[in-house]
Image (cartoon, rainbow, N blue to C red):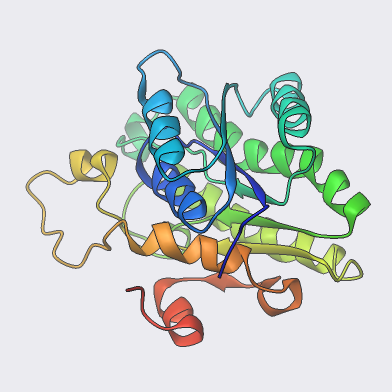
Length: 245
């Protein structure tokens, strides 16, 4: 489904899942606002160049999504550049490999702040613009670790929170029929970060990144009533839309 004429914000887009999602949106015809807290390693610029090779416009922005002024700046510059925001993908996230007993409180707070507060702040700032134009899609990014008790308590807690946030906000916004609040729930995806965590472990069942490059763009192009208030894992997506080619 074409996203031509749409403008899309993807947070945490310099690498991994965020980069894949951004490229998928661009491949479907959207213009991109890509943002990340880290900008000095050149990776965000690399993502922008790949988007531009697909013939789409892009705006690269640094910013900390846990800081309200930074989020306001990202949204204001996005509106200045493109005049509207059609889709927000709340992808930015951090994690830790520490066990609970080894996890410093400051790291616990950082994980909650980025993964939960960042999702809240970006949605809070973008949503009024969607309400004003009576259309828009917010796609939150969860994880299998929201439900699978396997590792990383802090990360799992935040992703369970992201899913509850999605369902609650979708219910509040149900009167605005043109607005969708939805959520994807990847399994383990073969990104560089995940592969680094999983050295020496069996990853034969991990998902290929291409899945999460294509499906968010599919969701962004669907009518709001069809996707809002739902949590989409791979099985649910394939049942609804078929397998990714």
